[in-house]
Image 1 (spheres, rainbow over the protein chains, first blue to last red):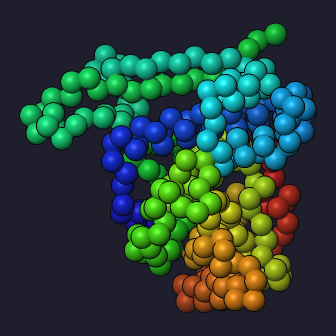
Image 2 (cartoon, each protein chain N blue to C red; image 1 turned 60 degrees about the horizontal axis):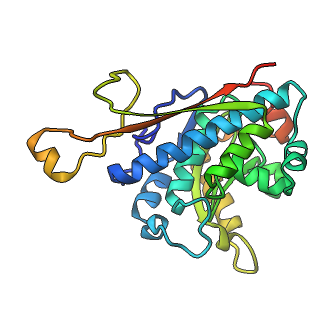
Amino acid sequence: MGSFSRKPNNRRSVYLKLAGEIEGQLRQAYAKRNEQKRETQVSVAEKLGVDRSAVNRRLVGRTNMTIETIADMVWALGHCIKVEIFDPEDHPSNEHRIVPVDEGAAETGSSANAAQTKLTFAHAGA
Amino acid sequence: MPDHDGRNPVRPLYLAAELIRWVDETDELYVEDWSDRAGGRSRFEHLEQMLSDFRCDRRPLVGDLNRVKPTKRGIWSMHCPGLRVFGWVPDTWSIVAVAVAFAEDAHGPNSVVDAKINEVLDFAKANGLAGTIQLGERSGLFQQKT
């Protein structure tokens, strides 16, 4: 099966990766709490003082969340955050890497100042 | 999967070649500053994210998976900002996506929904897949415990 042919540039890819990971990890955190029967979208909304639809929009990527909003969601779901912005040259791995190399650097084969962002949401514990 | 998404898919999603071609050729999907812009993404980026999340999330939210009336035809639509993706469910937690429409074209007297239903059914028939169309409700085909 084929795939879509138009690809975003590297700069855009960094944003899409960051947004996708945040939303995906929030959904994962929500799914865990929901399966534990500890939270629903309504209960999360009540904790945050927002409408349930706002919580849903945050989980499915239909709103551009501020850092504060992300923190609020993590808190309401009883999770923690660990953020790491790193140089991929220091962390070689099998994970796909978005390397924001500018055109000049690409021609010379260098990847100076390349950086990535890695986010994980950890369980807050008891 | 998009190049920026390093997740491993955990469930199948099938895209008709016609759908891929329409997405590739429809310039409006790639406009970032569109009329109902939501979540900082273009319509294409929302589509791609929705499809990736369906494939990779351990437990996808299924609120945007809807049966299309008349439900006896077994056609489903996936909703993302600005777009509707039409297809059918061949098995639990899997989708064959055949056609796309702009969300604003899926309402009102000039709605394209009926045309999209027929497009999906014609595709299934032409490819000998009509027998794979599962009927059922969201709770049955997309049970929340994966």
